[in-house]
Image (cartoon, rainbow, N blue to C red; front, side, top):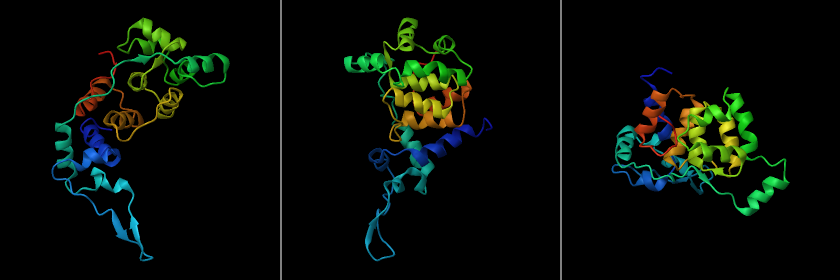
Length: 209
């Protein structure tokens, strides 16, 4: 992908995938689509809510520009959380349980990284990263996203790690949609990555710069 096109492609991806319809409908100039229609059998039917996405608006780029003006990164900024007692017991007694700590070395190996090399690229105190690697602390979602970006992670591996931490991809979250674009399109060059994050005001990811 040429450098001159990657931000434009991000905007197109965002318009096609972002699904917080309350925020989308609140953009000045947004035209609410006809949700109800007459089906072939003559009955009234309802269109899927995805018809409300920005990609279907005739002035999508103008609306997106207005949306960006009001963006602020409000995602939780802690890098880790303490596991609950029940979670710790499951980790100890179920050796087959897929946890972040157990999956991490193999996932990083797919990208040519180790826990040490990946940890050096994260803006996390080494003592806390070491505890996440051991499984005594659990990473927050932003940490998993940051890890995927700095270690050039494959999208399937990223989703697997999210699942191991009981997180899911959220198309109604600006950060998640931008991260999906970066990981799927393999835009890991720091300058290009940071330009994409800055374009959508994402500045709470624990990435060392």
